Structures are given as structure tokens and as C-alpha cells.
Image (cartoon, rainbow, N blue to C red):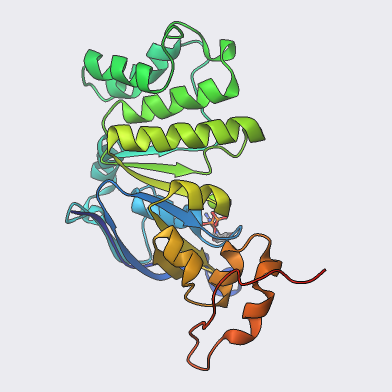
Length: 273
Ligand code: ADP
Ligand code: MG
């Protein structure tokens, strides 16, 4: 089932000399239950795309449909309710309330929305996120990884249709990043939710995602399963971006045909040093 349709999304910032086209005519669809990784270099438009998909920002042109409904047909007030109820957003900073404990932090958004807490869901999330026994801890009594788990649990508590994450692991140390990568994958499988995950780390994307959305300069370069992106890159930029280190692609450099297609077996050999 198609859950999200991104149709000709363009987002321009500023006017005149300072105008930036952060996103340029991007279209793709997301199936329910997928794990989409949006990757690209810094400033390529990843966060802009995620914010538009989650209704945090409005496009200059184009539409986003969630379950068939144009999210931008809503006025600002309706869009705010939509974000609270349908969308989960997670950033690199957890923004936990320091004076509230784990459970209080988790339930705050639901209570602020005037709804009652589903105790069963709450305890399932505490378990799923490995927070059992920590329910009454304050954020400063938790490690960075545990705090990020609370932030994730808090976002999942209102049962969002799609969970959006913008570089959520980037301020964790290398070991914790790896652990959390595994946790996210497990959580994705357990919840069956649709995840949209922004990262500049292509290894993270290749290991977590079911679909890769690679953008550069606001233009969608390829939207495919990780192995397809890896073995059949649409162009040399993609081939270079998913190669690590990029010297793996030295033999590929001359292989772009006149029609722009890349005719090569990726990773056919490393450059002699
Ligand atoms: P990424 O997340 O891939 O690093 P962003 O989506 O944040 O990239 O930004 C894409 C481009 O849009 C960049 O050139 C950035 O400077 C510009 N941009 C992003 N947000 C704004 C804004 N609010 N005002 C002006 N320019 C912006
Ligand atoms: Mg960003």
C-alpha cells in the first residue's frame, strides 16, 4: 500500500541574488512499512525534503499526499494538528524535559494533545526501547543512548503514521551509533511503521534502509533498493556517492555513455596505490 506520494516538490528559499532552490521537482512514492533513507551531501536538501514530507514546512510548488490526502490542503492550524497526530519527528537533540522522568516525558505530547494515555502501548514501548527499570529516572540519570531511546519512545507513543528522523544518531559516539542502528532496525520490524531517515552516512543508510532516496543539489538522483543503487547506479554521482572509499570507482569514471547511463560493474577493483 502506498502511504506517501511526493509529487513534483520544489522548495525555494529567499529571492533575487540570494535565492536558493533547496528542492527541485522531486517525486517518488513510499510504500507503507518501508524504511526510507534520504541521503546526500551536506546542503543537498535532505532536511528540506523531510520537513516537507512531514508537513513542517510548505513547498513552493508540488504536493505531498499521506494516505491519498494532500497534506498542504490544510490551513496552518489543521496542519499543526496533523503533525501532532500523524507524524513523529526525531532530531539529533532529544529535547527531553529535565524535570520530568522517562514515563512523564513519553506521555507529555499525548496529554498536551488532550488525549488519554494508552497504558498498554506505553509499557510495550518501554519494553521495546529497553527502558524497563528506568521508568522513573530523570534524563540526567540516563546515558546519551538511553535519552535518545526515550525521545524515540515519546515520538512513537501517539502512534504516528510515519516516523521521520533527521540524523538522529549524529551526536552519539561510534559504539552507541552502531548499537542504536541495530535498535532502530529492530524497532522498525517490531512496529511495522514507516520510517523516513535522513543521514549523510551512506553506511548507515545501506544497512538500515529498504529504499534509498539520494539527492544532490535538491535533485533526486536515484530512488531504489540499496543493492540496486549499489549495483546499478543511475549516474556517476550516485556510483561515487555510494562507494566508500570512492577510489573504488576509478575504473568507472570513463564508463558513462553518451546517453548518461553508466555502463559498469560497480566495485570492479580498487585503484592501485
Ligand atoms: P541538508 O539537510 O541536506 O544538509 P538542507 O535541506 O538543510 O540540506 O538545505 C538545503 C539548501 O537549502 C541549503 O543550501 C541551505 O542553505 C538552504 N536552506 C535550508 N533552509 C533554509 C532556510 N530556512 N532559509 C534559506 N535557505 C535555506
Ligand atoms: Mg540537514
